[in-house]
Length: 363
Ligand code: XIL
Image (cartoon, rainbow, N blue to C red; front, side, top):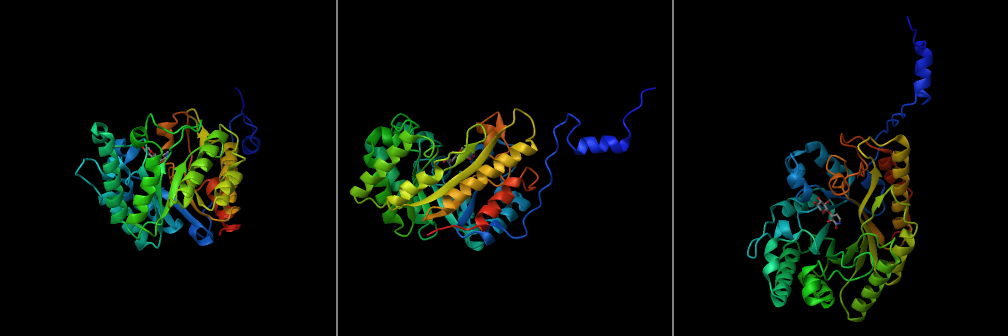
């Protein structure tokens, strides 16, 4: 008869990580204070709804998931509608607007003393099919009418609008192939959109917004040049948002702070607008080492913003893996947010809390 290891020795080996199995990540406790309580800048998250959520088996998270909604209310001082203000959702037909979901986000934010980032007025993605049939002049008129209607509806209630989202590709070329307004009307329509938004809500801060700006020199330069041209033309542009969709597949973007600073040097406010950190999983659970590395990426991203005067807003692109967009758009990656699917905190949540609490030179 074979004998196993004495129980005490087996336990000691497993807890020391000598069993050959990966060690389970150590438990993390929720910090005693909320993110919004320790932060000197607006700390926000995307509010799940629309987009990929509409294809999942679960009901609208914002309307039905009370534990999730409680996290939104208690932890954050800023909210972004993840999809509910995008064209396909809010303006599905030429004469048809659907404001219910966006109204709910704005009302909730006000009830909880939160600001709102409006996202987004012009993008190449998530547009309704009816735009495809329009002439150049009709496209221009549709954008003007859309901006007056949507921005006007929420006048005085939106802190920052992402007016144009993702206008350049990673090589710094204007997205004239995929963005209907840039294809029809060229760069000039960007300035028009900012002017229309400013007329509709003179108090809203108007932003450009994009990903990979900090890791693509060509894209960064394209944005710096565009901002300078818009400023020369007297266009009311107030800010540059860096989305911050990061992945452990790539090194942390060491130029993040310097990139934010370059926009600050042009007189713009800046923001991290869609921060998440994907973990390569290939079907497995994240390891303790990966979770620690993820926490460091979050900490460094927050610290980069806090180190730049005028970087006053940090938004996480989702707070829980329960609703993250990542597994649907990056099939081999996941676990990108600061709470797991059970709303249990990860090291990343503690890292964001500590980094925010460490404060910084926000201006
Ligand atoms: C994503 C949403 O998270 C998904 O729910 C949706 O299906 C697709 O869009 N850059 C942006 C965001 O500016 O609007 C995108 O959001 C993620 C990339």
